[in-house]
Image (tube, one colour):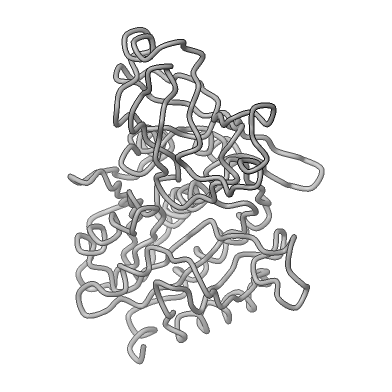
Length: 352
């Protein structure tokens, strides 16, 4: 479990460049059939679809937030744009890797003007993405292009190595949004595929979630599920909120979300999942989000409408270079997803 999460977290794959993640999925898929579509979404199946049974799609997204090379200046500094949602103040002084035109990874530092050379007015100014550059240690534009083989359009990813603290089960790494969801889909599919279920299950690992939930629009149209479970790395709020406001705290179980900016959850599906969790003594927490979104935003609008359940694995510092998550929350999310699937058949959703 930890090895899978570590490999997925350390791998580089911003929106539109998820190939490396797909290769890891194939490596760990076991006996599952793995296919991709023209958008590079990845599908996991265990057997031929039984038309007499309803279909549940287990959704996770492959991509992570990152950056892209926009142009290279005469000094060899690389200007870039964000891919996905970033707060500019969290970007400077961090290590990144640029995948060059030959597929090599070039390490660089996100640089800004040193305080020694800033005027008083510059010190007070709010930082913008235009104030930042990436320095790969070159001295000219020609060196970056000819020696480092870096070009406009090359993807840029945070450089972070996964770590695990055995004392309290804390994981430290990048891209937990949503490599934790990706890992959970893989493990749930492998576990459930061994069983004689009353439903068909398909794992759908979507691309380009961080730039508008794009891949999920295709996966939902292709799979045509009756239900979908969206497994996400959800933003943790426990280290800056009052106790009564906490809805996504570490080591408090997965989050079952009622609302965000992309989807108002089918409350019957949430109620069903909560009963399953209570019956199996699975810790969980509920949430009403005033911002953010998941692939449910596009999935629920396909065909005649698809009831979606959002299972969020709490992650502190989502959309930054370094994230914290707890292995117990991951395990409880995996257990809850599997138990929900085991307890559903065609009659379950007749009144949904």
